[in-house]
Length: 152
Image (cartoon, rainbow, N blue to C red; front, side, top):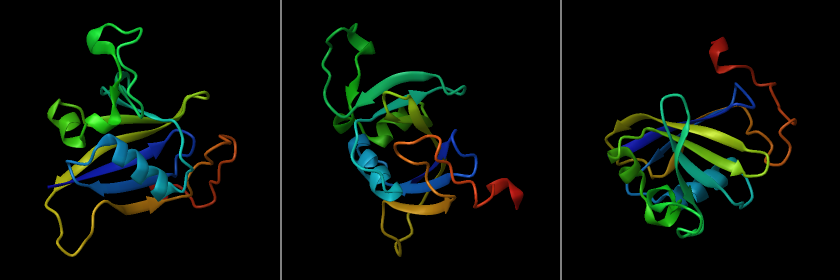
């Protein structure tokens, strides 16, 4: 099975990326794939599972934060210990990818289509893209010149 996720940004309504990945991909590997595919430099980041209103539920961090300052099940889990399949099996189809901790900038990622793999393709891969990626460091540097995906 292949999971297709759609990634959106609240900074640019035109920005869309669809990723096709294997379910056993670890969140740390998904983090690296996202950074590479959108051309961002390595950064501290977290994933959060999210509910239907995009409220954060559980945090997954690059480094193991241990239980310092947290009560048991509220402690962040390491990305390297969690697969996308585990997130889906736990009932979550939405993730928030926080890539700028200080400015609270994030991408919103949702499972849109699990499907059978195509033997002619290599995974993980970007299967669709629209509009330039928001600037990694400057949220005001939005390029909206490519038009909205809803214009078609």
